[in-house]
Image: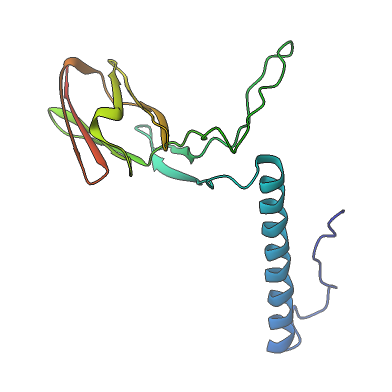
Length: 177
């Protein structure tokens, strides 16, 4: 079904009165509701009624002052395929999708702290790989899957790492070089 853009007739004044403006915004909000309903219907049709999904982004300022946008959330099964590969089929009823945990990186004078939200996960299920310029957090259990590769703002020492895990929050403290 092709969507027709919402447009108003041009008049000398944009709105004749407040009720005209109210009708315009009501129509606009109804269009947004329809678009969202179509989106969720398409997702459910292509991925089944699984455990749900999360998607979002965070925007920060990089060291050069330019905005840095990072996406996070559930892998909805969109695979990056080579031209000669067959698409990977996922059965949402039997396979969990990976989620990117919400994370924050705090650079101090002597160390870098990485905070990650990992609800429903035990400490022994968390695998952490610290590299000089990034940290990889991986959880793969029967009920939860998290994966996140976090780029660090500086080079760190891979031999001086402290971790704590309490109430679903993982804290990794890594000394700078």
